[in-house]
Amino acid sequence: MERRTVSGDAGSARDTARGAGRGTSRPVRTCVGCRQRAAASELLRFVAIAIDSDLPRSPDIGGSRAVRVVPDPTRRAPGRGAHLHPIPACLALAEKRRAFGRALRVAGVCDITPLSEAIHGGKARLTGS
Ligand SMILES: [Zn+2]
Image (tube, rainbow, N blue to C red; front, side, top):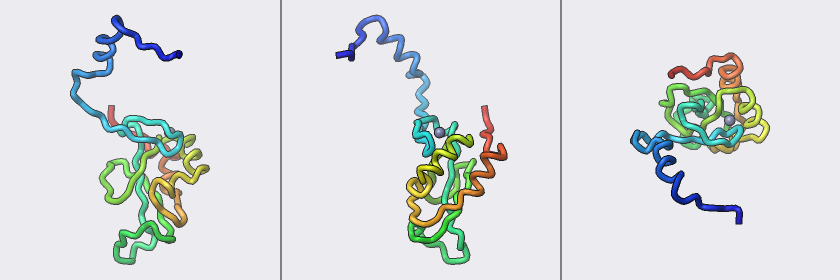
């Protein structure tokens, strides 16, 4: 119907525009707030950490235990992580739709204070080019 294949002129030019020659496959992640896909480098990774950390580390973070959601700017923290645009709007969206618990597979309470403070305080400003 409306879907037309443009043949001829646009084809080869578009391939070049998509950076085919670069050979870099950039990882793409989904923001848990606005659900938009973006390059991982544009998103802030965060992970869930069990609050009662004096217990031996339990893989069963998905229990009813409360967890703390902390930013992981270096993206090296172990455990299950998810991604978010480091802006208040996406934080609010994610919070509203309870996306944190779902993304991190946490059934209990998510304390997103550390993540929230990082974003609102501008500390989550991504460094780099
Ligand atoms: Zn977003």
